[in-house]
Image 1 (cartoon, one colour):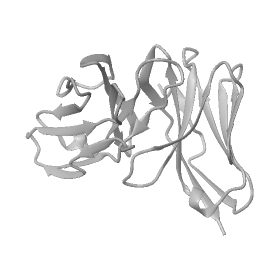
Image 2 (cartoon, chains in turn blue, brown):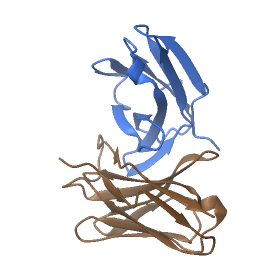
Image 3 (cartoon, rainbow over the protein chains, first blue to last red):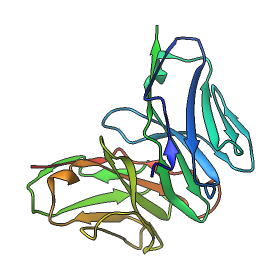
Length: 113
Length: 114
């Protein structure tokens, strides 16, 4: 049972435009969410996180939105840059099992010149 | 500050052998967790250690085991290797337990079983 889903395996956007990556979850026990960026043969790099007590968190070009009622979160990257091209994973966890993250299957983002 | 360090980065083992992977967490981090990444299953949680005790365990067979030392360094072991164990094994560390602890990953150890 896939508790964290990223339904878009890939996304292409033009440089300078907005990239929106989506993630859905089914487990109501998740209370914090993270986004990671990953290049091939490297470990995931932390981007941004959000707690379930918030509905938005912003860090530079990255903003994460959380809609608890819809069990949906999204990552906005504005403006998109060619260096943002990578695979993006959303992950969900519960404070009680802090390091046990459940990952989505990833979305490959390609930012075109 | 140094990141999460994993050794070895690449290794090839034969089916039936065993393997030990090592992880040094970020200085001051006391929680270490391990994940397996395969093309078919994605990133899956193996187990987590905190203060030398296993706190959580994922849905993997008993061939997968781990431990943590008093300096927070951790090792994971896979015995009786199978071809399907070929994967990227990732170690992650976090300061401790609690809301908002960001989890930082190492570069991973690529294991190929032939």
